[in-house]
Image (tube, rainbow, N blue to C red; front, side, top):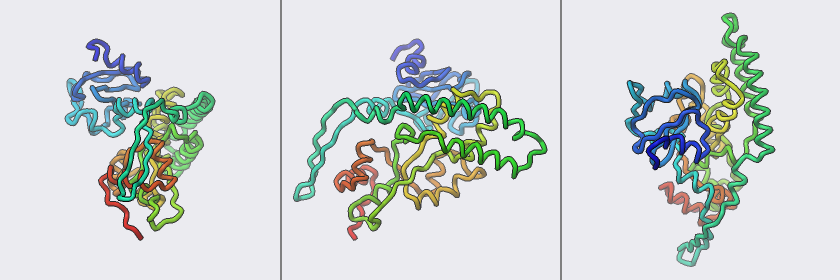
Length: 307
């Protein structure tokens, strides 16, 4: 790891796009970030703070003369490891087959990942998203003075928040917005012996649209199309795959008055998430029993009962 400008070097290497980046091997002590989006790097990964508000209000950070993170930046939700990023460039293709005694034969073939192209935003899609980010920022800036007026009541503000939130809903929602996580119950629902014969996955956005809209409306002059684009990719566009029942349960913990951050909401709803690859997701949808049971084992979950 380079001693000088290592944060800057890592920022460029992984294409994070931060305006200010700092590095510390153990991820527990830094100087303060002064420009945003800002990023903190350690020897295993990094965390991005799109706005100064999020940086200053994070419960995981202790702001003193310097910045201290008792649990290290790896303890902060949305921390990204270098291994996770590198795996997007190379995959382990797994061919599984079950033998008579239930043992699995796993053949691993390392190759260039064809899914990277699917997970990356295409030039056409990226251009479309940037256009929408630009026009939405213009709309937000035009409507913000009305939103902030003293005589705009709570009911009227809710309507404005709903309108902005609805606009975010029509942004692209491809594989590049998937966090790579799926709930254990969603995996179980695709087991060949599961009770539900035609299971469906529900895309749950980690940040509720109304909360995203409220945050954007409060940003004011600091919001621009570039920041909107980054916020969408880092936060507001991100979704996990869960069941429809879990999605219903989760709603009560995603309301504005109780929502803190995505991980907390999922914990309160009792939803367990597991990180998987796009290849494994396809196998789940195909009800590949071997893959499903291996994932459930990885998630330290009991094998589904045979009905």
